Amino acid sequence: MGKYVIIWLLLALDLVLIGLIFWFYLKIKRFLELPWDEFKESILRAEELVRTLERLGNPTQGPQSSSLPTEEAIALFKQGYSPRQIAKKLGISQGEVELLLKSKGFKIE
Image 1 (spheres, rainbow, N blue to C red):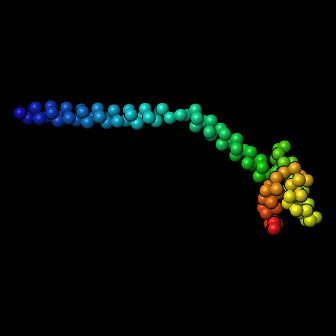
Image 2 (cartoon, helix red, strand yellow):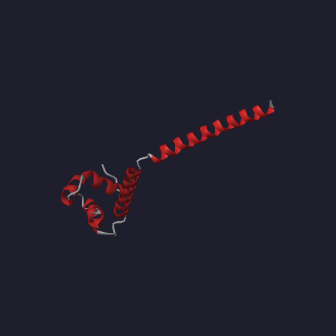
């Protein structure tokens, strides 16, 4: 009689282990089916955006330095030009001029 109890317990333990193995298999399968190529592309785009933002934040680097004419905008603003006039003269948007001036502490009306 005791022999049969042990066999049934071992059988139950085997079924539990098979269930756990199947559960882990499903988890690993779901992980492996993730769109890894899309993740890699997103990471590459994000890295490129970070490099672009770093260049824009540091105007002494690279050819992008002329795209943010902060000094020219400040000089024109001190001469009495409005942000709209500065934008037209420098060929950038009025919002960008206002942002440049506000970032340097000037008050825009």
